[in-house]
Image (cartoon, rainbow, N blue to C red; front, side):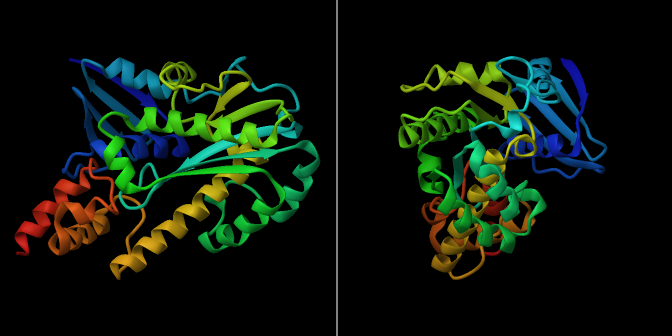
Amino acid sequence: MSTSVIKLSKNELQKVVDYYQPHALNKQVPYTHLVAKKGGTTITVYSSGKVMFQGNQAEAEANRWQSTTTPASSSGTLPKDFAQKSIIGSDEVGNGSYFGPLIVCAVYAETAILPTLKNLGVKDSKMLTDPQIRQLAPKIKEIVPFQLLTVTPEKYNQIQPQYNAVRMKVALHNQAIQLLLQKIAPTQPEGILIDQFTSEKNYRNYLRMEKNQVTEKLFFITKGEQYHLAVAAASILCRAHFLEELERASQEVGYTLPSGAGNKSDQVAAKLLKEGGLDLLAKYAKLHFANTEKAQKIAEKTL
């Protein structure tokens, strides 16, 4: 059994936690954010920023994240004055939340509109409160072309066995970008920036499985919202729509469905299981997360 250890920034560490959350093990280890098992590889995410991979595929899994620690694009770095160019930016929300949909959004922000977006207060959605995000989203929609795609939990559960988390996001980013390109045609962006969630090589490998592939002018970089306002705007639209969908679902069930994948999600899922079994839970949650098994145990204890 091989072992690989890498050190990541706080933001990069969160991407690792979100990616492996569906494979989380039901164990509490001091000074860790997450212990998960994917295939034959055990992943331990430490609060110090270190991530340890153990197993036959340890090196391959570690390499997936080492490639995200430095900017990566089709040319190795972003072109000069990239932040001022007319760009399509795409981002996603919901991959790490047990309840709620997976949402991808692509935004086209041309050079002339960038000052307006900046004046609105468009920036990384993680630096904004949820009320600020919900206030900004309608204003953004009025001034830029965009394409939102939503995968409901029901749909997610149907396609998840065939599409792992990365393949699903590749398919959605590609489709959102392709549809947006059709909307703005014959205008062509100077580049397409994807908030990086996997290596460019991995993205393009999965992209080959898609029918309509957008392959040109692609750039990949972590924290993409810091490099162009198109990605920042896309992240805001994603988050706003996610909040709306989670609120709508909460109204349907009659109580709050929490964001994330913590203990609160386990308790709420157990309540749904007792009310309507897996069929009901499947309408609102991503069943392959470890939360489902935890919720089933809680529900059994409270029968």
